[in-house]
Amino acid sequence: MIDSGTVPAPGVGRVVQVNVSAGGVPKLPVGEAHVGRQGLDGDAHHHHTVHGGPHRAVCLLASEAIERVRADGHPGVGPGSVGENLTTAGIELSLLDVGARLAIGHEVVLEISGPANPCDVIKGAFAGGKSGRISILLHPTDSRMYARVEREGVVRPGDPIRVLPARPDTTAATHLELDRLDGVEREAWLATWRAAAAAGFDVRILDRGDMAAAASPDLPGPVFNRAFGMRQVPIQRPAMEALFREAGVPGWLVVDADDPSFEGVELERLSGVHAGSLDAVLASDAARADPAIDGLAIEAIEPDDPDRMARWTEVFVAGYAMDAAEADRWRRIDPILVHARGYHHLIAVVDGRDVAATAMFVRRRVAAIGPTVVLPAARGRGIQRALIVDRARRAAAAGARVIHATAGLDGPSARNLERFGIHRIWTRGLARVDPVVHPEPAGRMRR
Image 1 (cartoon, rainbow, N blue to C red):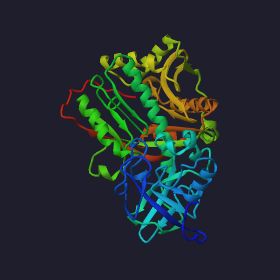
Image 2: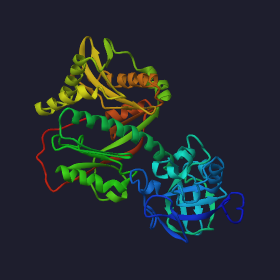
Image 3: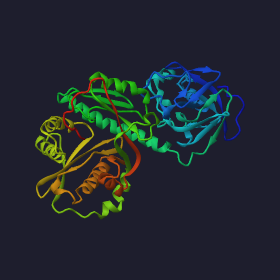
Image 4: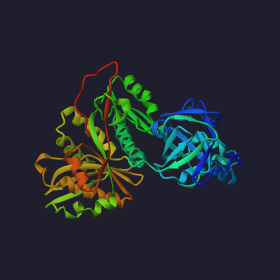
């Protein structure tokens, strides 16, 4: 039995143990620790790809959950053994809503940001290595929980914990949704980068969980020289910048528009992250009201249909007015990308003429819809909107529940998304990272 001290009053908990380590588990008890925006002083992680950063600054686990896990045949689980910073008593932490706040002692206030998924580092504490015993998906009462730091200060064993309501302006639920959307988007970009590498281009890829990056001396520009992960694991920033530096190319970090670590930096390509329920999109007035376009047919490109894939690429090339070198690159990449699991390429045809090309990527019940290019002669006829509806229907048939897209701020694409209830939930941009060597630009790569 864990000694949790005095039984807390209803609605009040207590810190049982404060735990830190130089990396890995178990985290060991200390008499006190300062809690800053990035976590507890003196604490570190072996898995920098999933832990750390302002949204995962502090990890908590309830002693009540530990007791249930131990009773379920895992006697090696105890305070600090699975890497939590604060072991608590009196509050069922994993049943709190995302956004709920914890006032700890006289100084610290934390905001619950989401569950901490089990990882390989902690499996040694579990019988048979079954760390899934504290997965919130399998055991909703027994998960570790992450928190961001709303107010800094010192925590000590015995400090009281009070549960406070969420702030009216909290973005906690938005960040939790962004975690899922970002994961799907990263996989789509990784598929594109890998297709380019398979096509014979020099594309250097880092795939580290919540961080993914690519650098390509052969393919200048932010499509193939980009890094994701600054929102979730900013501790990976040195690895991102090193990738660009070693490749000798400028790179671009995808960052939140309000990220304080980029204050004063002029971000490029500001864009909105949009999301919406597929059911709501398909039930929207826009989906029901848009008139049919005479002669329009929307065709899916099958991986074993190279002729149709070539037609798709030619629309893509013509719509973006690519130069010869850039067009040749995509003619090599697209026939490989069409084979990527989860990718769907679609071509719009009016009266037998190819007029538009688009794509979407479906994974984890999320449909990430890519940009649509419509040839100039066919613009202004509602083809963009027709392709949104078509992709939504195909995504729903594939089991997706959420539709996701990015679009330039307040442009026609953003307005079309908003019309269907695919609302902007976040804003981000690209922060350029320049290496020592500056290669000459060689055309515009767009995606």
